[in-house]
Length: 235
Image 1 (tube, helix red, strand yellow):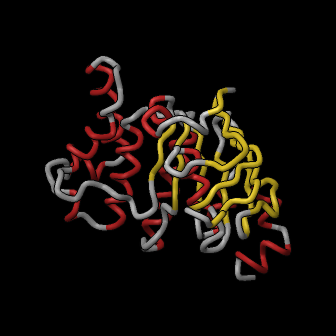
Image 2 (cartoon, one colour):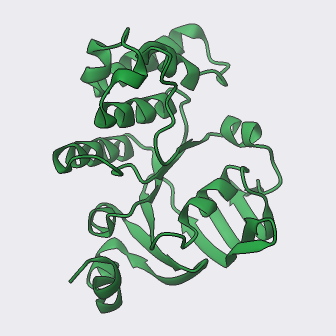
């Protein structure tokens, strides 16, 4: 579904990604783990067209999207839930969700049905739909960010550090929702510092170090890999 081949990218004169390749299969959770500064977020930003590639290709449904603008990539069914959530704090929960559907050309009835589905998936949003988003807790804001993404009806969802700054019980709740979304047929590329949780959730995983993919395998294979255990699992 999504295939990255030998992409290089960076910021100014600094190259961050050095010819990385990975594949995200339809309907599955793929995770990308690595330390701070390894290139995880840059990879997601390249997919979204926020950072332009210096070489290689990014193919979505057999079409190279590496030169497209972000708006065009979103219109093709790819959505990013950024690190830090980046909800609109001065807007209400409902207004944030409505913003998620801004790029859609569906009939209003279909969008309303999707809104009802998102509110059923996140009861806390349903009960606080008039509340300003900036007054919500971190966990509630993360759920709002996921809900806003779903309102765009994406086929592929890129998630950047969804557990960051959240209490363990909220992290478990967020990952339960991630599994529900995947079970509904969505495809997910997950970037996550919590390597144990990410690999336990993923069908397939990649390890990135200093802008290069150094290991890959099923989530379970990487969980059992001594190198991964030593470097990322604290074992």
